[in-house]
Image 1 (cartoon, protein in one colour):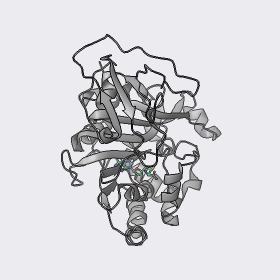
Image 2: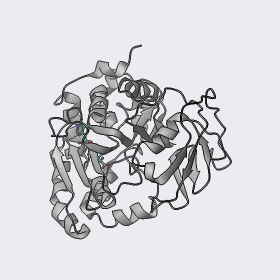
Image 3: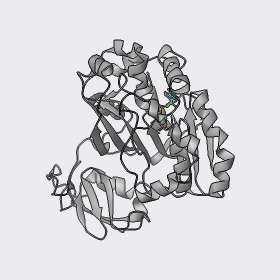
Length: 356
Ligand SMILES: C[S@@+](CC[C@H](N)C(=O)[O-])C[C@H]1O[C@@H](n2cnc3c(N)ncnc32)[C@H](O)[C@@H]1O
């Protein structure tokens, strides 16, 4: 099996990276300069994130170029790494959610973006009442050079960055190197429904607008598998619209989606298997008292038992989500492949069997 993305392999400092630095450092002055909806999100944030955004400096918000909201729940005390943190919007939101006992490290390669992020660290620390964010200059393909140690991070997040990296296999390998066992990758990015012609990577606008390097969903799955991750979950997915006629003419033959995906550093199976295990959400994540959404088809209502596959049982019992769930049963008896249930009327299969 050939995964075409590795053919793009280059070391940091290549022409693609220089074009991306130029685009985010010099061409764009604010989110309003973007030409497509790929690197921006219109979705209204949930109340706790909206409140946290209200405490972030205006200049940081102005230079937000993300395509989603890679902010998972239950972060208190966690060490979070934000890959391609840009001006620091998500990092400063995460800083409030991890609280004074947690920490956030943002890594980015573009000096102009880092300058905005760093300009406000003292102001933000005063606002929060504690200092727990730092920004490091570096390439997400080489997190060791940025001083990120093995198994040192609870959560890796990223907002519209992996598509820009020419060497995606190295990025994924680095992510799974720095994650602790049971740690989570939770990221938003642009995905394509096919492998895109490599020649498009020479167009700085198509690259900068997060389209030419978009991850082909199946190659992304293969890259995760190479790193031992056989069961990633889609949390949200929405189509990307290309309104600019010039951009549409060049790349409109492919369909793009903006997705938020979560994956865990856990030895999961490559299919959902049925061991008769049951999970109950305790309703204890403060901002989610009534239900916990694991992905786009697993909604756990507080107190309601749900039959889950072995992988979901492991995710809910061997990660930082464990204190919030009661998982019963083990893997001593196997009942075959886990039956996939159609989503219920709300788009969530919470009525018994659900699979991934
Ligand atoms: C679309 S912007 C998103 C910035 C930020 N995540 C946000 O939501 O505003 C992409 C950012 O990723 C950074 N970036 C792209 N490729 C990178 C790489 N290989 N290593 C480090 N940073 C990178 C760019 O410098 C830029 O700041």
